[in-house]
Image 1 (cartoon, rainbow, N blue to C red):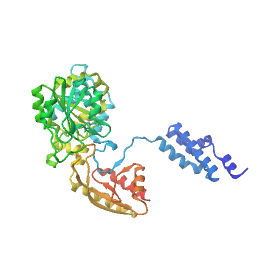
Image 2: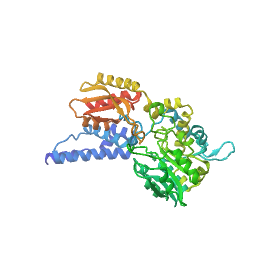
Image 3: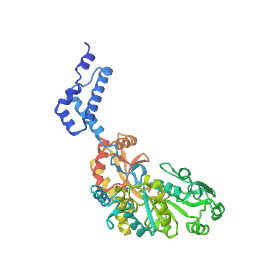
Image 4: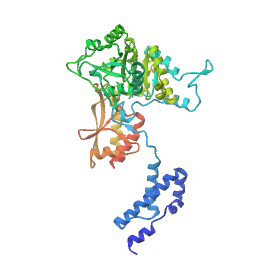
Length: 463
Ligand SMILES: *Cc1c(COP(=O)(O)O)cnc(C)c1O
């Protein structure tokens, strides 16, 4: 018998490994099927090594670490928290808006108990799930009635299907947008059964373009907020107030897909491109839709507000049942919206708004704190604080560059790209950006309680 054959013969069996104390412990703490799978994989790997290399460690002790790591990997959650050091506050790939503890407390309270989700406590009879946020939305936005569905794409689809199925919807060519994640106005229009009536040109659309397009088959005038891009230069679009006049004159409803759904006035912060929801309500738009997890800073959802007449019709559409929100989302919305009763509280307590509107001075202080901890623990990298710019993300405020501070890391002995990969695959994963051959940690989106594990992650990745 040669060496290879001897090693193959002596390779431990799955049963032998299951009987050692570690094996017993694994079976108690992890799903048994993953324990077996991990043991088999590690044995198979060893067998391959014997065949290819004629040598490997075939002792059980030499295999336990590999098995344990594999079991942990197999039994860990796929969807997991990570540290967003990109500075992009509403990062679509990283979960858009995050929720505050107060909001999550409410989600927990409502979901670990029975609730009056669809039960009218006054009447002792069946109620509607949407009533829980109607009053709040009326109070905050001034809109007569409201409805929340799964997301804004569903909201737009539902509105078009209810109001304009088989009839024409007028949209400016400058507003036929695609939003990340495959939301395209012409496609949603087609899916809703409404007929798209394009008017104007890419850069200019006039009131007379709208007026000329109106005929007996026109069901709706739709305005779409150019949430994620800007056309600059020789441009013109029609203000919503003019569209309102036109819609009244011809008795055709006006709808505005606002996208981001900002519920505070951003002008004092120097941001003039994002209309507040309240302004659009005041302009008399009949149906307004926006996302719950962009600038609003709540859970995923699509909010529809407007005239009772239309909201009633939309509620009765059978499609509404297919895109309804669950009680967890409702609980999160109610708690989020409650913050908006007081604008200052909203900015303080809603993480998205807080991260976007914090002062560069506050960010700089945090960046310095991160840098000083890093410098103490990490010697093989050049670490410094530098000014930079961050983006809102999520297709919101595309042209606004938010002044920020980053911790720039120039590692020695490992490339910036390798560092990026190690951090991305770490526990927790750390996601940041590479710029000028340095690794940039943007302090805007790093929260104070994450600093220790951020620094530890980077130290680990560099050794
Ligand atoms: C983001 C956005 C949508 C899609 O909203 P979701 O909540 O992602 O479904 C639709 N329209 C506009 C203008 C948007 O900005």
